[in-house]
Length: 319
Ligand SMILES: Nc1nc2c(c(=O)[nH]1)N[C@H]1C(S)=C(S)[C@@H](COP(=O)(O)O)O[C@H]1N2
Ligand SMILES: [Mo]
Image (tube, rainbow, N blue to C red; front, side, top):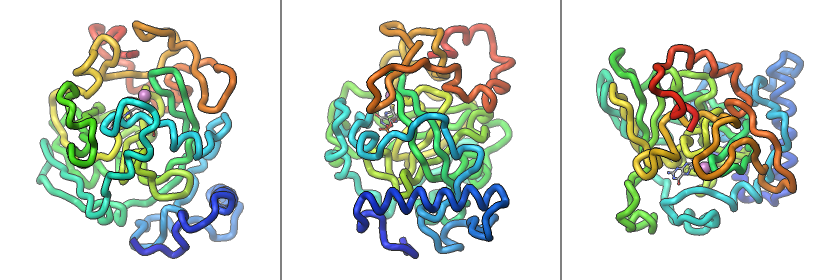
């Protein structure tokens, strides 16, 4: 990757943060038409424009999550990435992941199957930044500034057939690197899926960076999904395979415990997990719990999609 600026890891933390916030303020202003030509060039991909993740323009619709940003120190040292172990402290283990030469296979019900290099894909995308809430099914939450592009843009490149009803995504499989993948009781590789409507929703986001830097490995480098209105386990990390299908994909946690972790997993404070309440959540670093919101507070963007769901989905829709 050719960076216009010094890579972020070469900067002391304090400098990174202030520079990052400074850039964002400029870009939000520009996005609202108040700045002086500082917005990233519209219609141009990252490689073409020769910009780094630091250059992504803030999406003004998601410039403020209405809650305090979670510090990078906390969010990057408290992770769920079971490939590297079932504790939250896997950030060191995850550094074993090698993202050089990463490719993504795209197949199933598409006009033509293909494989694309991560760098290539990035070059074709208009990068943006969004600050969004994340609610884990375990009742902790965080607010992170992600960089990336809408999943819908990737779907356009993939050219699914009109008969495709779902998108299925998978994480890499490499037990040499991910030690927990040697344990046979897990249904590796980690798999997740969305309906095509959900995949095309503006909130479905492919994350390739966080806090104005390249994505840390423990966050799911080089590319992970983020669906902020669903419980966190839907937001699959380190994706290397995408398939379009007319059959509902069976996801990792659903296969393990379908009474607890369903396909839909939409956030709802009124439907408890079988073993705990979902009414509240504890933001990482906070002392006190806060109320959990319907669709994690994103009903405006997503509620429309669920008007005609069949009765039999019932409670499963919320877990
Ligand atoms: N491949 C993979 N993706 C995953 C997981 C995982 O174990 N493996 N955990 C999920 C869960 S439960 C959550 S809450 C989020 C955590 O993301 P974070 O570590 O960036 O906070 O990632 C999700 N994506
Ligand atoms: Mo989670």
